[in-house]
Image: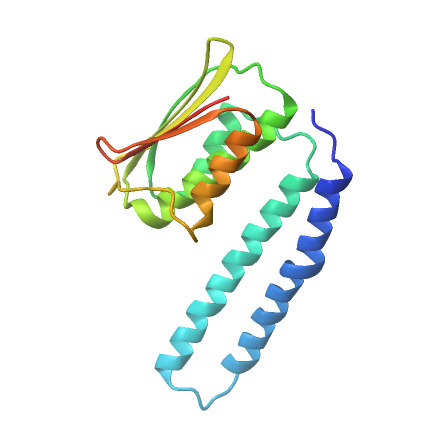
Length: 190
């Protein structure tokens, strides 16, 4: 399995010592404001919502830190199911995952790609059903994630999720396609 490279460990440390700690401090600041008895109910409700969003961001950063430090990340049906149900808890999934013969670096990149696609589905698609397929095709790994959501997904300047996926795929000399038939289907071939 891919070793915990010095670069990955350095990024994990920077995330922990920087962004994660800043988010925790921000959360404490919101807690102090919430303790003010003079706040209106409307302001208090908005601050509680902000506090929950901060907690969610802290959890996401911690997951990313763990992934950077974890040298045993295997791209598998179990991992995909775990990611799917954690990121999109209210969506129905079908999985068609074959055993994949891929390099350790591909495990990490495919996990990151799947995570970003699932986050986009949760945040933007309004989907109720997602199909995740992973299989070998002519000695290449194919990952397909399709949903029955609103569709219309495109790579846009200033929006970094799909651009990051495209860059990861290009780095691995693969191909990336988005189809909009019924919902959205993203296909990755590495």
